[in-house]
Image 1 (cartoon, rainbow over the protein chains, first blue to last red):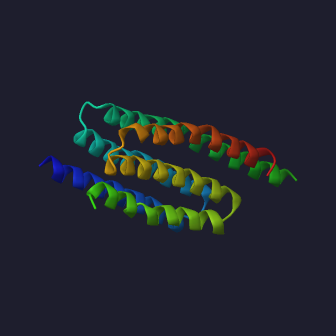
Image 2: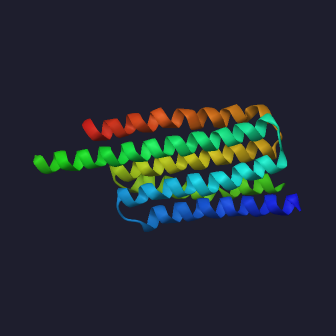
Image 3: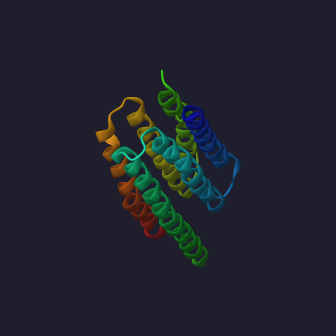
Length: 97
Length: 83
């Protein structure tokens, strides 16, 4: 049963990564494309992390995988904000010239 | 081949998609593609570590996740000011 859930989670994580990568092609502006990163980080990271935790419950590997998910989610929010702000400032400075 | 290795290999097309966008798009799109590629690379490392049963190498994925933050912030700062 656990193996079935683990396989399903891995499949879901891979599908989320593919969907995010396809959205990178489909969406046009960089502001729209930023959302692909957040989607892959949250959905893919949650699925992969849960699969690792199910396979290695209570081990340092599982906890470190959970910590990686937290780091990626927090860093992703900061980087998305910094990227959007940088692009906005760049566009406004180009319009002034 | 176990499922972990298959999942890690299945992530390669997504990584390739990021590479295509990074090569063929504008400056801002390259930064976004780099961020997505970093996230997928961390996932692939995590899956490979479980696939080959080398738990101590999880620090490698953790280090990449931690170092991606300042790297992307510096890139964004350069885009804002100088590039």
